[in-house]
Image (tube, rainbow, N blue to C red; front, side, top):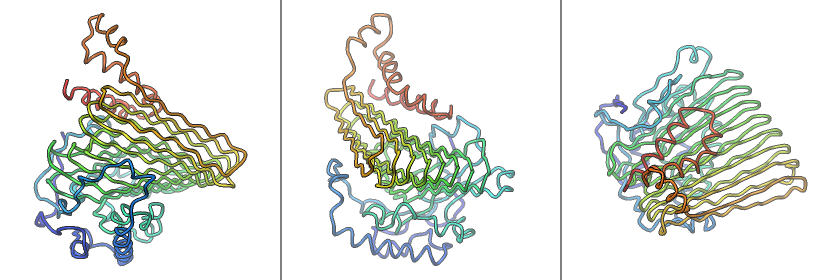
Length: 444
């Protein structure tokens, strides 16, 4: 149980809807530089225009948004009441720094003094943009384009805060850093942004978690993640999506990996009523590599959707994506993956795989891998599997004195084990295992 206390005394309610009035009333705009205000205005103009055009049918045709009513959610001012979160990650490791946001507002920020002395920046995006605008101006919304689509423009216009990590050249951070994005009050819309910048030769690990204070408060998160990995740098980034099942979660997430750099990116999809993630990995320099791990467990009537792209823009690059899904009840998971290889990206090695385990007759998975290759000297492969739990295996285990719940737990843990083996951070492995155990306990 984590307690975070808001530092502002502002009243808790502000704008209604997402029009020009709401844009002007956004409580995070008070300290931001002129250039960020101009970025918002440009994004808002794009948002208004894009509202008149349909979303990309290839990405969105399997995502049911008929029940989604954005007008029911509002951007909120900071609260003076402490919020308590049942976090999965924070209590399981020692961190070199912590940043916490509640309802779009930073409420906690700390960094080990020895890292601050080396020039590391880790804190709320509002404060760091105000203090280090020249450093961040060219980075913020550089790979998540404000006019990319309706969701990206919506986020850029109404961005309410988020986390910035900057690691200078050749600085190595051994201990992981932790970022919490929380929703507390019912009907709150959060537009937080995560920006990670690693200069040449830097190394860091960022563990990020989303969480709700209660199980029944409706919420909306329209987020973005930008991971900028410089030449020869090494980044491990984990995002555990653990909203309650009344939260809508929409996000653009992009990692750009420079020459001879590497990115290990792990995604855990546990919560949300409906989640749709547009996840891109851009291998922008020769020798760049990326490993993407996805672990999803959907229950009840949850809808979890992922649209992933591995784009090879330079020669001698490598990408390896593995997503594993478990579904139960009437849940649905959609995964649409694409490996793109540009004409000059020779000697590319790209791989993607999605495996799904179905625990009920009424759940459904849509798994669609794809390749778009414009180079002639590459190795690109993909695979997809889906199947039910073998009742004979369950019966075999139960005949040996194991309860049905324990048998299902063993089978699901074994199914996810390959993902766990790929994750170097022990706290993340333990957390995902605990999350799986909790999900299995629902309705048992």
